[in-house]
Length: 207
Length: 207
Image (cartoon, rainbow over all chains, first blue to last red; front, side, top):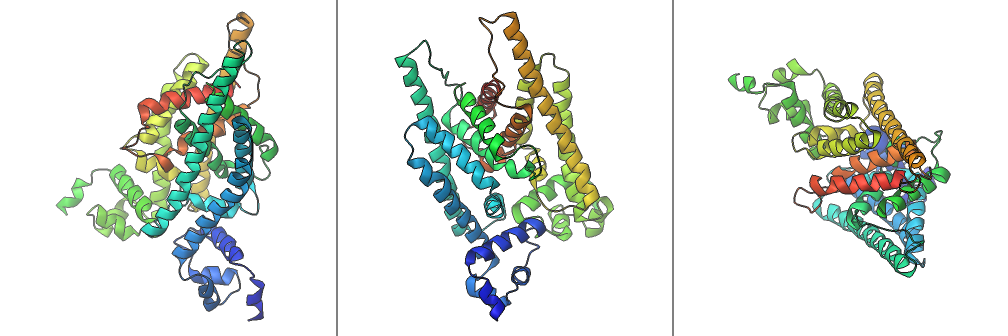
């Protein structure tokens, strides 16, 4: 019983469950496995979450809250579209590579069918994020057009070959795919990945 | 019994299994479910595949063969690095969006733990593909450098801000992520996605 008090937060349950789901697969992991990994009784676990679907939903929801707090909120405060986009790319990559939150955020890509009402709530938060990125990219392209009017000799140009929507999906794909190839001991880490992905995206959307 | 002869190929089994794995999850799908969906007896299914792991491996292996035949083979024959990269982007997107093969290729991203020997074979084919893309991007950047030496007035430039490796991961992320947002009834389809992703990547790697 005393051991149970060590599990001081729902977040620890979510992180542990996320790790197990990734290691063993969602279906192959039982509520018993999650309780055992946390040294909780099954009753102790059910006190917090009534079902595995609820845990998966809360993991995904928590991942969207992390994105909200650590990417969207700081980005909204920045003046200048290009600076906002640069910050978004950096902060999103930092969240994706954060050792603490990696296990949580990667679960956003778990395709296990959730009950429709829960799936809908997650999807609508994902859509909000995509729309935010899309309109930010449109703002960057407009900003560059304005530069061009002020000083046609020196300004960069955008030919408008890439729509904000296609660019938003490309950007999210690049970043959300990182978990598929990232190695903690590899050459590509946050400090050199952020500037390269940033230049690639900016070069790309001004194509 | 006669019905079983209708299942004329291992490929049909693989496609059906891939569809079930995506709809219900890999773990939640049994060999019985696969046999039933194909109107095969369980013995009929085991005649072709001895285990679910073998089916998953063969799906992934088939996906890599599709990539080999329909992307790599045609691309290798093309003269000119930029044209090769443009063809690779187009052909890879066509494979990913092909209604016939979508169910197969998407399974490459299934993270279910395969037996280590099988996992190793898939991973080494994936690595080959990544290295091919990486060295192709390096060739494009060199080609552009040469243009620049020939005619500094008119040529495009590359500042070398994006390494071939980071660019290769970005490109594969963009394309392999498509299945997460693609809708058959949506605005973004092969005909307008290919040119946009192509310009984005070319603009990006010459950043």
